[in-house]
Amino acid sequence: MTEEEKGLIEKAQNGDSYAFGKLYDQYAERIYRFIFLKTGHKNDTEDLLHEVFLAGWRTIGSYELRNAIPFTSWLYRIAGNRVIDWYRTRKGHISLDEMTETNTIPIELTSTGHTSILDALDRRFAMDAVMKGVRALNDTEQSVLLMRYVEDLSPEEVAHAIGRTTSAVRLIQHRAIAKLKKQLEIGNEQPLTRTS
Amino acid sequence: MNNRLHEHLKSLKSIRPEAGFLARGRANLINAITPAPKHTFFNYLTPVFKMSFATATLAVILLISSQATSIQTSEEGLVASLDTEIIQTEHVAINATGSIASATYFKNISPVISLALRDIADPSMNWGSETKAKQAIAVLTNN
Image (tube, rainbow over all chains, first blue to last red):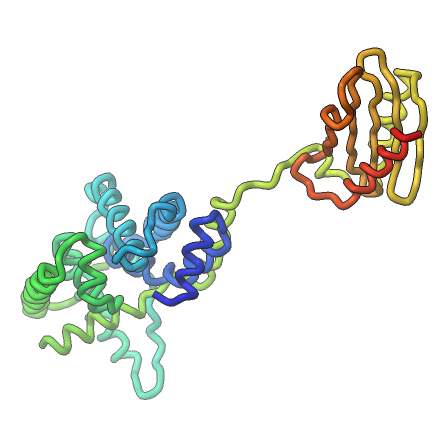
């Protein structure tokens, strides 16, 4: 954690909402992606992101700068808990198709440099397959994979975020990768087409 | 396979919110967590109108009581004092922006204790003429 970030946290703890706004600037995109990859639902992700930062503001007084929990982990933990709450209340009402088809964020398909549109489409289908595969994992496995590989958090930061030990994180990561690989292999045996 | 899988996972980084969403989200967040400013009737008035309104209010008070002992006007505003039966003296000061301060001196109570200078329009307002008002009231008191 940088000195600047520490200063922002201290100011926010003293009620400075603009300092907290700067923390939002630093983390909102990452938390948004984390929530979206877990829910697959754009509108709810936007609402959940707002709720995560509101909850962060309400509880930032209890965040201790001196303890070992990195601020990143603290925020991801709030986000993870919000997603669990969301699943408890909403998951039964949303089909996988709805999640992956109607609410997926458009990803640029334009060709850039030497990459053709077909390559971009391939990438897009691969991403969809990976997203579906990740969502088929259990909540903890999802969190570990997303934090480690998409958000580049260290095993220690992930451990704090999910409330497990570092060795447990490594174990979960290994298991999750194996599961995901198996799912993608199964997926490859079937034609990977987008349902209309 | 592992490398490709890692690449695919890394490619998920390209997922971003719609353009402008984060800016709107930030604005909404700041709006939700910043305490709303106190809205009083006076906040909605222009300074000139405030001044006119405050002067008119004072004039009504003075007319009703018919006990005005003095009114002083200056560039800083207006200071009036009046005596009533219950309180010994009430001084009211209005500055150029229409903010009002008043000091009340109760009968048989030390002025130091009974002095209650307050901004009627908005108690939380940090207004520059408070000292001027105090000085004006002090001059009136000495007179």
